[in-house]
Length: 429
Ligand SMILES: Cc1ncc(COP(=O)(O)O)c(C=O)c1O
Image (cartoon, rainbow, N blue to C red):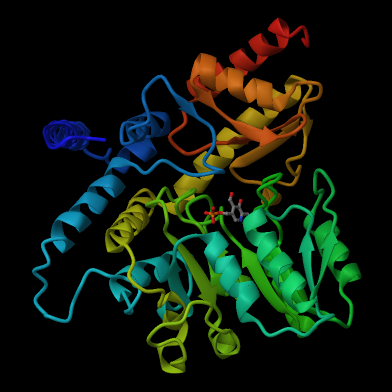
């Protein structure tokens, strides 16, 4: 057991360590050069992205190829989060009833830029913590009878699929799946698969806009139209989309959409959203209930009434939207595509089987390649522990390579060299 003197001295050490850490991180944030001027993008694209790399606190000798799991927040986002704490934690809000607790209010200063960024109305969007939470709200919120069907793909993430599994176990709904080809050849192939699997009991089409498994960009607009034409709800898991590709949810025309901007928009961890088309809002139940849960006048805000939550996270989200707008989503998407196409081409030259669509419209910044007999977990460990290169994949032999915009060609080439080296060492070349 700690005696008092020991406790006080260890507490003092802890405080000193946390102050040292804080000042180091603050110092690091202060040291970062200003954002490169957007005009540099027109003059010298590579130089612009090389400058942007400096906005990330990922160490210079690390290569991060896994925005597919989560993105690293750049300095403008980190600064905004700190500013958020600095401003709100003083507890000196003008209105005595105002506290920094997202979860009881509209937070339009955060919803407005987000709604503009993803192409919908403020009243159709609820700020949540991630796509898993939003997908759970969707599955829990829609009325279905035992025997009613939800149709999804065989490439859904656990955070998309399991909310429906829960509903199936609890209420007897039925989950049906279409098997996506590896790779998906074109949009018509996907549409036919879904169309053929729809039955009179199908109530919901649920699919990832970009799948976690292969990174295929599914034809969301066409699938939503197919669902609508048959009176079926369309719910899209767009975890990867904001920040990776331009997004206009209203144009897609789906009924529900979930996302995790902490992946490709590189927003604060724990910032997600749920979109519910205005005409559908009144049909969806809240999953978490507090004041306002049944107030249909507040539209989708009802779904973000989740109790006390973390407002500075939203400062970071807003900053990540501003950064993407300042650079331009068209330029970001183009960069994503260029880097991903380069890595895909190089992996194919090395004999990898592409599970990434050959149709450029059905791929963006996630490349998925099958590389038998390379054991992916051993490769993943070796890449990280020996060379500070972070990749991910799926057993036994699939690699999933994500290409965030700040990645340099030299980074990709270093990964490729190490991939060759691994194969030689393992006698697989
Ligand atoms: C398609 C898809 N949906 C949902 C998720 C879960 O995301 P989160 O953990 O941010 O809820 C992921 C994560 O990789 C995903 O790829």
